[in-house]
Image (cartoon, rainbow, N blue to C red):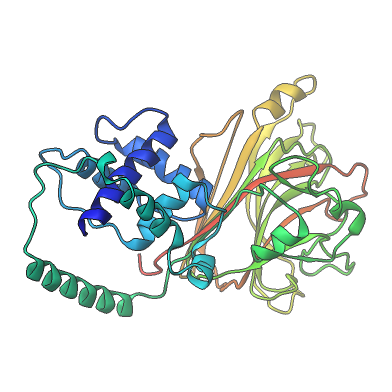
Length: 392
């Protein structure tokens, strides 16, 4: 990097650490702290900087004895600048399409250039001759081009924390709504910072003679063939059979054929046996694109038992919950977490091979075809999906 680029980077990284941790950077970041900063950047900007990169930057910025020369890309510098300058939320696809000139980095660098005395650079940094730097950069660019050509495709990351859930904001982020029920859809912003759906009667269970589709299904196209998708809820409290919410992966746009569906669901049907109601995680897989064959239930695992008189305690331990689906080739992993607060580890509940190449993901809340005794809200806190390398 040139002097001004390096100086700007040093100050920018220190400012990012101060913004995240509220204390000046005085020692290299640990793995945990690096992950905290990476998550903060993703949450605020919609863009990704690797945990390992952040950790290495902290060593370099502090000029430790074991630090190595760091040359963050312009895209990384722009992401850091977006975080520090509190730029509008975006994603990698939008930035490439609308702001590929990385305006926030150059804006930040211009401010540093106007006051270069504010930056302290590493004292022991050895510089290569200009010609050597040119040769090195040429070699690096050539290697990157070759590496890029061998990649399976660009890996995208999409995050929606639903800071706003208005129609325009959802549309701008690539969401569309199917089978819209205007009465209940108008209530989607009743909880700040969430997208709220409601458990209306309806289902997409293949093989049914009754056709009542899922209403207010929130859909977006998948950008990657291999990915990790995560859906987070706040205070989801199903209380009637079969109130449920989750996400669906589908090969077709109408979500009526070949699909995989994962949801949290209320269950109080035990074939006549006395047993306390429970919240389960349920997984369904439809093998037929015609949609005429009943699906396979490959996951039916109790998450929460609701003993009479202890309902409030039970649901307080389900205040934060999440579903995750990982797909590589035709191998799927299903995970979940739940607890009274965020931060509980994911638990794997199923894995297997499914002949499914989904092109769409849908977020849903339904009552199934059971009578609508009570329609309840489902507050969606966050949805994220990250591309994975299919070969790994």
